[in-house]
Amino acid sequence: MGENFNDPLHVTKRDYVRTSNWSVDAKYSKDNHAWLEAEIPNIAAGGLLMLADEGLQKDDEIWVDLIIDPILGPSIPVHIKAKAVVKAERAPQEHKHSYAVVFTDISQEDKIRLDELVRMTIAKSPDSAFEMSE
Image 1: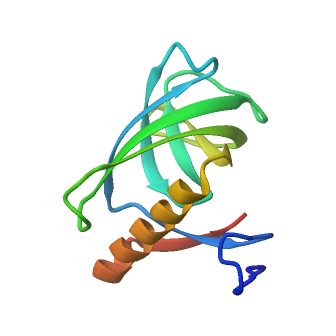
Image 2: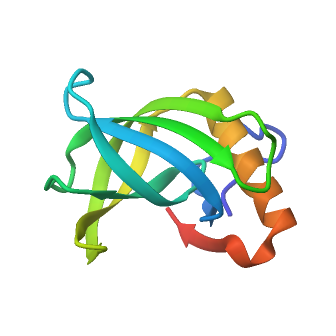
């Protein structure tokens, strides 16, 4: 991994650990005004997998608004709002478009909170983890 361990916020390349053991209320927008519902099968500090009814294109910039309630984590949901970009369209799931989305403008605090929540969830439920290189 390309982490600088002297500065944990400075990451050049990283293998993000993802988890799917969460309840996420998710919306996305192309213009940061008109919001559409989405499903989030998995999430990491660097991005997420998003299922949506509407078709998006690779490199589309979107905003995501997430309320994350870790099933095995703290009882207080975490609210994250970030700018992101669609990196790839995946095979459809559950009759919805499926997209790999990478955060492009997320606060360092939110990125750290997401990473800590993912790692805590995985510690409590190791079967929920998988890794993806970004």
